[in-house]
Length: 402
Picture 1 (cartoon, rainbow, N blue to C red):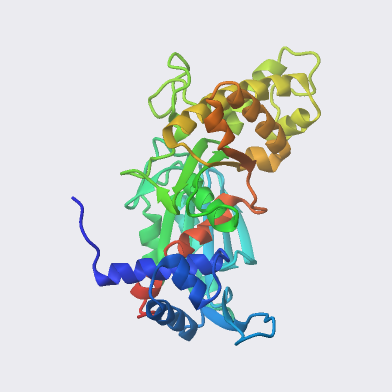
Picture 2: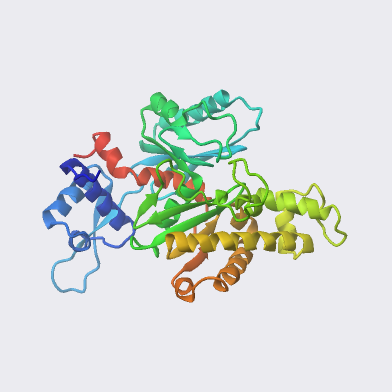
């Protein structure tokens, strides 16, 4: 049922709006903020002054042409707070401390297997966070962002769709919050990657609809429209890896058949390459080749690797066409393992050619396809963006802002 907003909610929305405009460099003076937001000068000044008082913003003199008073600009003090970034995959834990601009301060990786005790892993994570929290000279931790390889909603990880094994009985957000009393946020890695691209790429505006495609052990998508993350009722929106592209295809763990990620994930590429390599005589790949070996062979035009990759790109292109008609995005961004392993340009060229030949020209011409602009893994770097995306709630709820 539709409902109105109380004054506290409106204040939080306005704070986030102003912070985002300054961060995206779309406005850097009080006058510009008032014009772009439609807020009164008094409202803008109250929010800006409060952010200055807690040290999150600072003022600086703008250049002048010698006529009139010099304008005062506003910048974010990205070192006022830090954030803990945590990414959990099916085989590794990545944990780091970063400032609010994404500059790395500390970083740790913990590999593990299906046999590793998950409770011990959780204690290791807590120990690392405790070290960061107790660091005497470092700024306070604003929040902890957690990236997970599958849908997460209301403390519930949907393991049937996700990649994590034996984590189902651990409410990691609750466990970490109860230990440290620091705001904790968790989200699907594709959603986090989408937020990261939206925050980091200044060419992406609030008017864009962005779809971020993650191509790794699984295939997924995160969707940001008008600056808002589209999650669905259980956080499953964007799970394109479980879109059927072949109703008579192999059975997926989700219960569906012919799911997109069965053909396009990096795990699928390696599996299919191993099958073909066992009977191929002109390939450098073997029937037990690794992911690294597959991508090396692909970049060297190996016939088996090329055949497997191009088949996957046709399936991926089919999925992209469905996405275009479902969400009508203005920007499609490809990221994660397939891009980080050097196949990004080949992927982009293959998908563009496939989609261009099959989609309405007016739709295609108004769509930008590109590779991730993040130098660091977006699903990890974006864990801190998840914290920033909740900055107004954190500042109000932690009584840092009033």
